[in-house]
Structure formats: structure tokens, C-alpha cells
Length: 172
Image 1 (cartoon, rainbow, N blue to C red):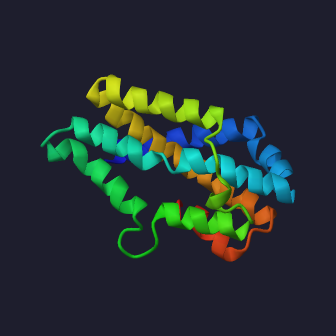
Image 2 (image 1 turned 90 degrees about the vertical axis):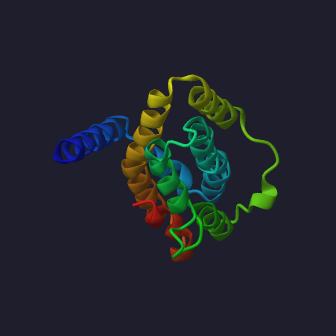
């Protein structure tokens, strides 16, 4: 378990280094510190954020009755539901959207970039070898950690109310 733990730490450190090198946090802050930019971010990210459980279902369906294979996916989905202790991640994200004045009622069509992103992920989850699909979901989860830490800092700098930050805090 230590090797995996160290590997995960290395992957997270590499992701953080890439985010720093690309100056993602400062570039995101430039956008979200403007009222309309914050609303735009909230609306655009919604489609990517809310599709993640779908990927778990697609891969899980391929696992059949082998609970060893689908147990990690089940844990992901239980976590998505708030572990029975908190609102679901999607509800927390809708709360964030409401806090910044970007209600889901304003959403009309999924933007092309997120549509393509989600479509490519769904295709990969359906068509790649099962072991690769399971591994990809695990990597997706690992990369979430530094990404959501960065998002939390940016949202704090943008002055998002505490209730709106709950989603980003739940992802830590």
C-alpha cells in the first residue's frame, strides 16, 4: 500500500507542478474575480462536473458481477452522494451556482468543449479494455485533488460565500 500511496503522491505533485507551470490558478482568478466570469465558469464547469457519475456507471456495467472490480466505483458513487452524511456533490455544486447567481435554470445547451470532453470519456469507458477504463477512473480521481484545491483557492479569491465553497471543500 505504501508504494501505491507514494505513487499517488508523486502523481499529485506532478499535476500540481504542471498547474503552476501553466499558471492556471492566476489565469482562472483573472476570470472568476469578475462577476460575469465567475458565473460563466460555474455554468461551463457544471457539465463536466455532473457527468462524472455517468462514467462510473458505464464502467461499472462492464464489471458484471465481479464486486472486486466495481467496489471502487461503488465507493466513488457513494462519495458522490455525500456518504449519507451530506448533500450530494451535484447538489453542493448547484448550491455553489446559486451563490454566484448562475442557476442551473439558466443552462440551455451543453457547450461544445464539455460535450466533446464528456463524449470522449464515455467512449473511452465503453470501448477501452476494462482494466484501462478502471485505471482511468482512478487517475481521474487522483487528478481531482490538486485541481479542486486550486479551484477552492480561486473561488475564495473571487469572494464566493461560504455556502458556495462547500462543494470545493467536499472534494478535498
